[in-house]
Image (cartoon, rainbow, N blue to C red; front, side, top):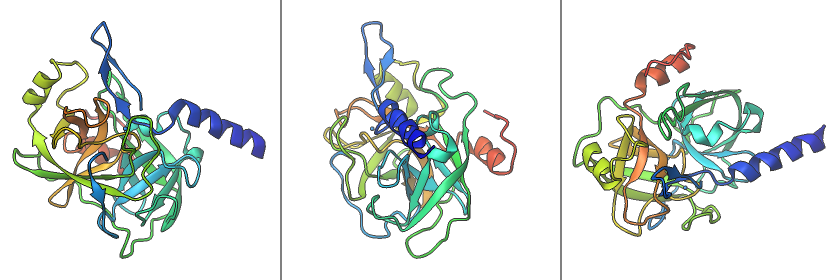
Length: 266
């Protein structure tokens, strides 16, 4: 039984390693995906107390996420859609994902019922852990937004993502600041792609700075509120905006799932 468990984990890792959806356009104009902080700097200890690492095997970083309360983690749908709960480990309270402050195991996984319908939309999920998360000086929840992101907002991303496509995760938590790009401007940059809509927000710094593999599902925070969850973008930091799930847009869904009603509302 133990050998079967290990084999299943290895199979899942092969098909979902270092998740990040990186968008490139094929000849038909449809987005093709690979997996996803380039140009950032090391975060100070305790800088992002809400940050978690989602790991299929303890010590193997796959995606980021954020603590919403004692039991719930928010992340990207593509980070968990192929993993049953028993293969999701949540690491908290650390800047080094391989040196956990706390370790928790998933009890429930709720991927948005309209995930990837249409393609690249509704890429958001909630993970409930099997025991309450212990809050301390390095582990705290992040507040949900009270309004939409405004033009001029500074948005901070944290994560362990690689610095090159398909690279290894960064051992130390990184941080980077972005500006907000209005949806109509972002759509124009991406040639009106159908992979983007009102459930997304776009962020941009400059060429050479952005998210990459392993940042998926990670938190984007502005003024102490969680405004985005890393979704997709052009392969790492190539001068295009990164596209994130718009947490404010999904507030009703998040609250319903946490309250025990998983019915989709958006």
